[in-house]
Amino acid sequence: MTENQMIEKVSTIYGLFHDVAEIQPEHPLYRFNNKSGEITVTYGEMDELLKKMTCAFSHMNIKDKKVIVMGETSVQWIATYVSVVTAGGVIVPFDPLLLPDEMIKFINIADASVVVYSDSFSKLFEERGSELPNVEYFVKTDKQSFTLDPEEAYVEEKYTSFNNLLSLGKYLYEANGAPDNMLAHDTEKLSILLFTSGTTGTSKGVMLCEKNVCAVLTGIIPVLNILTNKDSVLSVLPIHHTYEMSAGILAPMIYGMTVNICDGIKYVGKNIKQFKPSVLALVPMFANQLYKTIWKSAQKQGNDKKLRTGINISNFLMKLHIDVRRKLLHQVHEAFGGNLRYFIVGGAALAPELVDEFRSFGIHVSQGYGITECAPLISVVPLTEYNPTSCGKLMPGMQAFIDKENADDTFGEIVVKGDNVMLGYYNDPEQTAQVLNNGWFRTGDYGYIDEKGYLYITGRKKNIIISSSGKNVFPEEIEEYLENIPQIAEVVVVGRENAETKDIEIVAIVYPDEEECKKANLEGDAIYEHINGEITKINKKLAAYKHINKLEIREEPFEKTTTRKIRRNLVK
Image 1: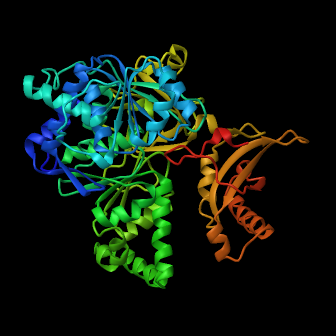
Image 2 (image 1 turned 45 degrees about the vertical axis):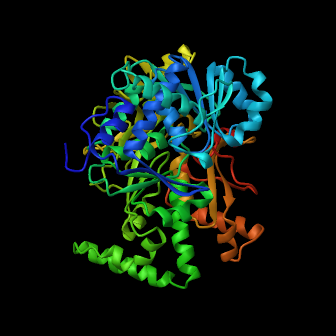
Image 3 (image 1 turned 60 degrees about the vertical axis):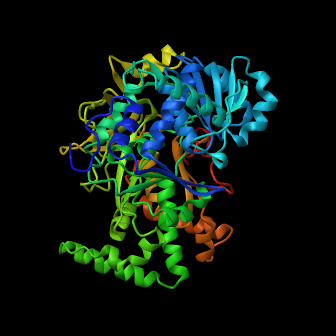
C-alpha cells in the first residue's frame, strides 16, 4: 500500500466506505449546498447512514428486486445506490432527463418494486403511479431537507420519503445492529442494471455485478496514486452514468478525498470557486467550455496577449525543468479556485492540442477509455505520465487484443477481458452472444496498442464510412480537424451516396459558433464561405479518400445525451 492510498483492495462497495471511515471518521466525505447553507457529511457519518439505510431496505425485502433511483446527485442518491446493492437488491440508475412516457416504460421493463426519486418528480409519480402496478413503494428524496438523524417515527406508506425510511433504519439499527452480511455477501450476482442512452439510439440494459465495479476501483488504485486525502473533486457529470459513479464518486474515496457535489451545470463556475477542487472528472465538451472560458475572460479583461506571453515563457522554462506555471499564470488558477491540478477526461477524446494547452496552464489532463459494459473503465493515462494522444494503458487486471480483419491492418476492433466485464444484456441473450464470448467482450470500437502499451481509439465501428474505393474512413478523425475551426461549435461527419454518381461523399454537418462568427464579422452566406474555405485547407492535409466533399450548415444544436454526446443516429 502506498503512502497516499487508504486501502489495498475494494471487495464490496460498502466496504470501501466502511474501511476509509475506520481510518478517518471525521474527515469530510461530501460537501454540498442546500437552503441551510453548506453541508458537510464526514466519512464516519456516511458509514452510519449506510448501515441504517441497509437495515431499512433489508426490512423491505428487496433482495433480488429492482430499485429505481433517479434525480440529481445527492447524498440520498448515493446512499440508496450503495444500500440497495448491500441489501442484495438490484439498483437501476435512471436518466432524469427521460421523457415521462419513457420513464414509465422503462420502469415497467425493469419490473421495479421500488422507485426512489427527487422531489421534482413527485407530480409525475403521484399522477401516473397507477401505470406502474408492480411498484410497491415510491420514495421521495429532498436535498433541501437533508438530515442524518430524522426525529419523526416511521410510518408504513406506499408513498413515503427518504427521511421516513431512515427513521425505520435508525430504529432497526439501534435495536439489532447492522446486517451481518454488509461486508461479505454475493458480489457476482446481478446488482446494477443500467439502461444505456448511447448515441446509436438502441437502448440496452447492461447487467453488472458488484464485483465488476470493485474490479474497476481496485484497478484505479495504482493509476491515480499521487492523489491524497488533501485533494478534493467536484462532481459535475450526471450520476446515473457509471463513469461519474466510478470516477467522480467512488474512486476519490480510495485516497480519502472529499467529494463536492455541484449545484447543477449552470453553477459549475460558482461551485469551483466555492469548493476549490483539485480534480475534475469531465467529458470533452465540458473541458472545451472551460478552455473557452479562460480565454473569454482574458479577452474581456484585455489580458489575452499577456496570458499568451506567459504561456510561451512558461513552456520555455519547462524545457529547462523550471516549473513556474502556477505562479506565472496565477490568474487562470484563481478563476478555478486556486487548487485545480488534474482533469480526468472520458466519454470521448479531447483534442491533443487542448491537452497541451491545459498542461501549459499547469493542469494535467489524464484521458481514459471506457464503456458501460465494462463498469466502465478499460484504460487510463496514469497521473504520473503524459500522453496527449492516447486514452491510456489497460487497467491492471485487464487483457485486450486487437481483432484485425487483415493481418497487415494497423488497427482493428478492441476486444477485452477482465473482472469488470458485464454479465450480459438484460433479457437479451441474442445481443449478449454477439458481443460476449468466454469472457471476451467486443467493444465495437476500433483502435491499436503501441509498443509502450498505450491504447489509441481510431473510431467507432458503427460510424465507419466505407468510401467508394473500399477504404475505411473514421468520421471522428475528420471531426477532430474541424473542431479546431473557431467558428464551428458542433460538427458531425457522415457518408452519403451521391444520387447521380452513386459514389459515397463525405459530408460535414456544422452548427456554427454564433459568438465566434460575430467576432469575425461573419453572418449568413459568409459563414458558409469562411468554413468551406477552412475545409479546403484541411483537405490538403488529408488523404484523397478522406476529403470532405460537402458542407451543410444547420441552425440548431445537435440533440445530445446527458453526457453531452451527440446522438449520431438522429443526424440525417
